[in-house]
Image 1 (cartoon, rainbow, N blue to C red):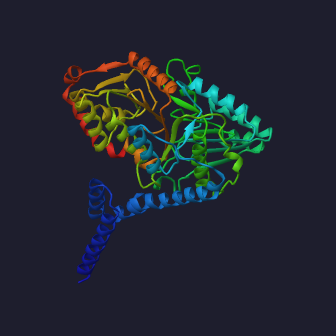
Image 2 (cartoon, rainbow, N blue to C red):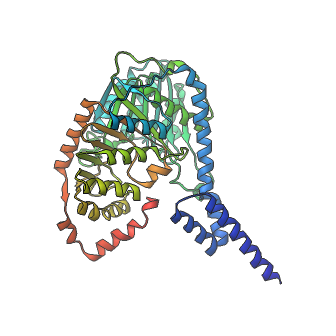
Image 3 (tube, helix red, strand yellow):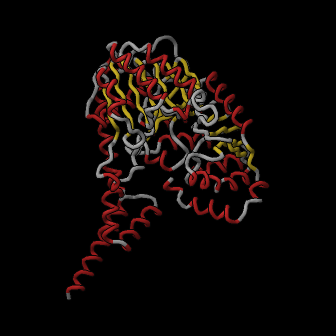
Amino acid sequence: MFWTIVSACEVAYLIAMIGVIILEKRSPISTIAWILALAMLPYVGLIMYFFVGPHRVRRKRMRHGRSSAEVRAALAADVAHHPLDLTVPHRGQLATLAVRASGSLMSTAKRITVLGGGKECFDAIEESIRAAKSHVHILYYIFEADRTGTRLRDALVERAKAGVKVRLLTDAVGTSLSRRFLKPLRDAGAQYARFNPIAFGALLPRIHLRNHRKIVIVDGRVGFLGGINVGDEYDVSVMPRDAFRDTHLRIEGAAVRELQFTFLEDWHFSTNEIIRDRGMFPSPEGDEAEVAIIVPSGPDQAWESIEQVYFTAITQADELIQLTTPYFVPDEPMRVALCAAALRGVRLELIVPHRSDSRIVTVAARSYFDELLSAGAHVYEYPKMVHAKTMVVDGKIGIVGSANLDNRSFRLNFEVSALFYDATALAELTRLFGVDKHKCRHITLKSRSRLPLSTRLAEASARLLSPLL
């Protein structure tokens, strides 16, 4: 009788949990995986679900969403935005999608400068910081306490001592800065916060819901975003042979206001402080003819906005797609969009690192090469770590940001990219792509056909982990 009651309780528990999981409306694979985990490991599965399951993702998403809404509501009256006339059909559709999917606003830029490496990027950031008069806001996934990090810290300390308001926000998992490193900043009056600290140590997922953005804002007029973190490994002058190849943007104009909103939302989420200062949103200076849209994305949004922008730009391409990413683990819609573009005659060129800083991601990425090559795409492997996340479509549309082409960037991390049409910036991105391609090894179906069975098996096995990479 006792075991009958226990069995009945277990069945009732399992049925109830299956109902809860089904109502989450996750992907079929994820739903089935959680149901099997709860059925085969009822107690362990329940603990895992409580700590790392979809409900936790939603809870964190709702909290960050409330932060975003509160910041927008507090500051919206202080910031004037004007609708733009988008007369080019494809451009208008893509820009409208970016705005509606991300919750950002249509904006323009006075000037967009492409920074094709860490040294160039850090020099430009330091120059802007040292010219700051009002405030400097910085958000990074990784901020190392090395030579490069110390250089930027000291520039921030100098400005804080001069009365400039300095706020530094880093991800709690990507960055670990010592009290000793932070002391000069705090002594100078700067504020420091960590995004989404991990509770209960290793019990909670260290890879979920991370802030992968890289943002610098100076006086609300100059903004930086892209793929470059703060660290020596990005600077060729510090690490001549092994420095990452990466790309960043410097933006002036109204688009910086949207980047400012993104920072302030993350700051509020991390500190519960709403910063009400209309001086952080100065009116643009001079004419701004080109559309430049800041596209934030994260698990707090209803749509995967950056993936939506990538997907739409790829499907609208007429002649050429030039795509660079360090982690190429596309989901099914993105894989189909890329293959379809190549099959319909668009020249698709993809640059990935020969060996990224994640061996399993490198192997998993190669499992997608055969179908891309069969569709007519051109795949190139860069000889060292390429960390840039860029795309140019038909020489007319540019996307640069922090998001990789993988599930984690599109769905789990907080990311930010810029969508723009500036001819000068696009020409520089195209030039850099050509320089990088010249250094690459061209992957072909013939070279792939010579791979041993063990290599192919390893690639196929790593591909099974794609949703987690």
